[in-house]
Image (cartoon, rainbow, N blue to C red; front, side, top):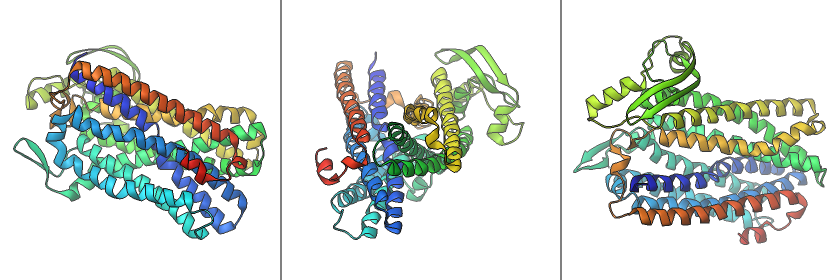
Length: 458
């Protein structure tokens, strides 16, 4: 493999490992804060036990998420120094803001929450978890503001071959962030809600002690799951419509649309052959006019195909291959959407069973929910692969190509060594995270008497 491919593979693997922890870190603090708020308002000890139990699992996930995230920032200066040189004045602004405000807010008040039990007034202690939730989601917002510039550059000027920020307001109100951030936030809520429902289902099936805690947890998880699932689908649809305007080649790739159509058909199943900048259709089963409807909310309207977009980019930007990996974009989109609709169906069934008061008498469904904990992770990973790979060959859309962003100092040998090292270390961390989550999840609420000492162990 060449240097660019190895560097991309290394960053991609590192990102996927890191993003394994992110959605739960976004969604779970919100649900823990809600549970603790109910405890403050009702005074029922069961909600205190629930808060401590789910908070303990949050701590494990948070600690390992921080470790994996730090390495990503180092890679910008090491493997991608030309990107850092070109984009540093812009990319550094949201990253620095995230570290100095959101991350410190999140980590500081998480520490206060851990050690504040029985020391702070109940309402003030619950407020610290709300601040953790605010900090974690503000942290995600700033990271996505940086990513949104890479997807749709705004508020900049090119000075001496470098991008410089000219409008901070435009940066933080980037049209891309309007749909991207809500999509990520709601996916975090879905991840956390299925995490809670799956673990609660395990304990309900085992008929362990403190059934009341897991009955109540299941109900809260089901409500959050249906709200999050519906919102993630609606916002995802809006995001796809925005992509049609901002990155039409990504839309053409995820639909395997080789030639422009008006009205445009939606692909049920397609296979294409891709060779450099040429894409030929091998198999295509399509529904007429549906893609136009999904794009424009009407059964008419042209959606440009890969061939026309490639020719247009060559005319405007010069000879090159502007087509992303089509089959990867096509299938990651369908994995993401398929998992999303399956999660919505499971959430709907859970809410119906909760409403009828019979969810404990549905053991088959409870068993399904345990492996369903992994479904949001599959959807999240597929979505990020689509987001980043569908933008290729651009690292900053329309401004800098990925092949021009690599550091000239790195060699294939360096990248192979570090890639193997990161994969082994991160694989170990992933195993450790799953082991710790499973271990403490199985223990139940009765084992959770001292969250402070447990947190210090990590």
